[in-house]
Length: 246
Image 1 (tube, rainbow, N blue to C red):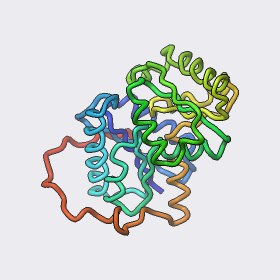
Image 2: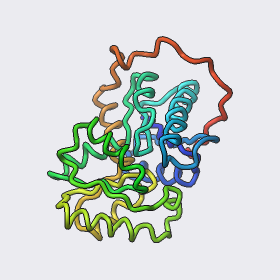
Image 3: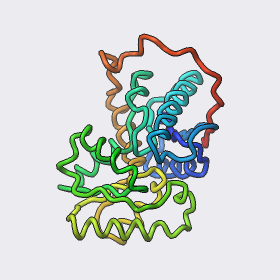
Image 4: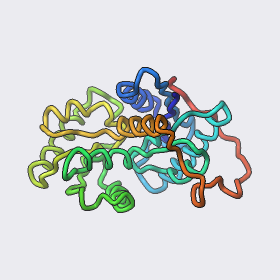
């Protein structure tokens, strides 16, 4: 089984980190390939960035399809940009990391808190809670103030801030589970869980697990109606080739 992780920002360091987190939970029969665009947004921290990210998701999946395709795809950005468009392109499972993390957190506890990066991303997180039917389960949306690219440095003090904010959500909002709201936090689950004392869910691992399970079950993306192939496609542009960590 081959699962392709699509990181829609241009950070190769973050793409490699995402790939490592995915390989830790993937079974021995699962090949993990992680790709990112050569050009575009360096980090997804605004609505303008999200537009670029959605286009990158489409272009990277199309490039993978031209090379033979994969058994499933993960949209590795917590805003789940381009998720619906990606599902129009393929009939295999396509899962966003926010979608996956929220569903797994709701299975792990009665309530959860999302701990993310900048406060300007909280509106998008709340939109996704509504879309996925998770507003009742989510008892707190917390921003750490950490820019996405600071998470590239595994030795940065960002983890202490994430732990502090997570602990506050557990103490004051009574969250049973913490959801890490950025793909760049994928390597922090064990550390945060140990220090805070509750389960911590990373969307990359959750999405890989769900895609693998769906593929084994023979459950792909429906091609009926909304997720049928798009009737009209724009003329292809000259896109830079994707960068792969495989």
